[in-house]
Image (cartoon, rainbow, N blue to C red; front, side):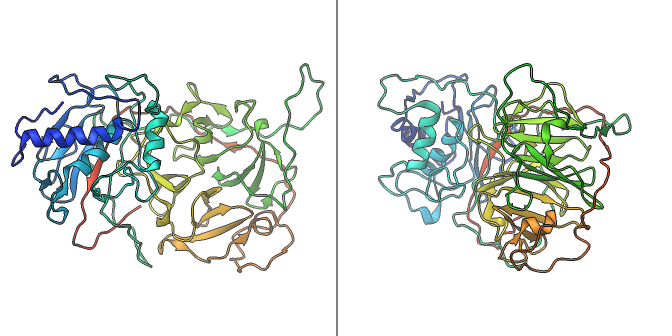
Length: 485
C-alpha cells in the first residue's frame, strides 16, 4: 500500500506502476501474489520520507542513503521507505542522472519478503546498487532464495498476503555500484555514530560475583554402559588434522576437532589431550559431531556455535534458556552455520564469519550491526569458507583453513604471508615436515606435561534486546570512500 499520496515531483500513478512492477519480479518466480489495498494494516507499507521520519534512521538528502526496509514481522515489519529528496527515475529513464525506482524497490521488496543479501555478483540481492537492464529477468540465485521461502510458481497454491515471518531479522545496506578493493595499507577509521534504536540499549551482563572456575576434566575411567553407546568419532591425530574451532578461554588456547579438544597453557600443551569436549561441557547436545565456532565474551562467558544454534556457558554450566537460534543474534534465517567467531583486538568488537561473508556483532544490543554482512575479501588473502579464526594473547589474528593457517596483519588488513604455515608443528609441537616462515620464539611455549588446573568463569546475567533493524541502500559517491570493519 502506497501511503504517501503525492511523492514530491513524481506522478503517483507511475510510482504505483513501478512498485507493482517491482513486486511482480518476485511474484513471477514464486507462489506469492500481491494485491494493492488502501489499508494501514497492509503487509508492505511504502512511504516517501525526508530526513527524520520516526523510525530512528533518518534520510540524508540527495545521494548516499536512498532507501531502507524492514524484514517481515509486526509493527514496521515489511515496510519500505524511500528518500523523497532523491532524483527518482521512472520507467526506463537515464540512470546516469538519477536512480531507478524500479531497481531500488525490487531490491528492497526482496528484504520485505525476508531475503538477506546475496554474495553472487549480478544478483538482485547483491549488496551493491547496480541498476537493472531492460527486460530484466530475476537471476537464479534470487529465484532460488525466494522459492526456498515461498515455493516455486508452478504450484497452484498462492497467497494473497505475505506469511508472518518470525523472528524479525535485520537488514543490511546496499553500497555503491562498484566492488571496492581495499587499499594496500588501510587503517580502519573511527566508528561512525549510530542512531538510537528502540528499545534502548541495555547491558548484556551485570557481573555480581567473582568468576567461577572451569572444572577440570575428570579421569577417564571405564564404565559399564546401561544403553547402547553412542557412536563416537575417532580421536584426531594431533599432527595430521585440520581444526574446527579455536578460542582463547581464560588465557588458554582451546582447539576443537570433532568431539575432542586440546588445551594449551602458558607452558605448552597439557598432558592427556586431546580429550572429549563433553567431559568439560557436558550440556552440549549428545548427537553433535563438531563445534563450528567458539569465543569468550568480555564478561568471560563462553559462546559455542553448533549448526543453527548457539550455547552460552558460564564456566562449565549452560545458562538457562539455551540453546537459542542464530536468528536471535540478528543473523539471517538462511544461515546454516558460523565458520568462525572472535573478539578482534584491533577494535574490541566481536566478528562472525560464514562462507563468503562476515558480520560485526554489537554485544550491548545483542544483534549484528546495521550495515552487515560484508564480503570476506576485506580480509585480504584469507579467502572464503575458513575453518576457524581467533586472536591469540600476542594480539595477532590467525585464520585457519585445512591443515594450515595465516597470520593476519590487522593494520594492513592482509595476511603477512600468502603461503600458509602448517598448523601441527606450530601449535602442537609436531615435527616440521614442511619449511615454514619463521615466527617469534615467544609465540608458543615449549610443550610440557602439566597437571590440569581449573580455570575461572564469570557469574552474571545476560539479556538480549529484541529489536528490528533495517537495510539502507547507498548510492555511488564521487568522493573517495572509507570502508571500516
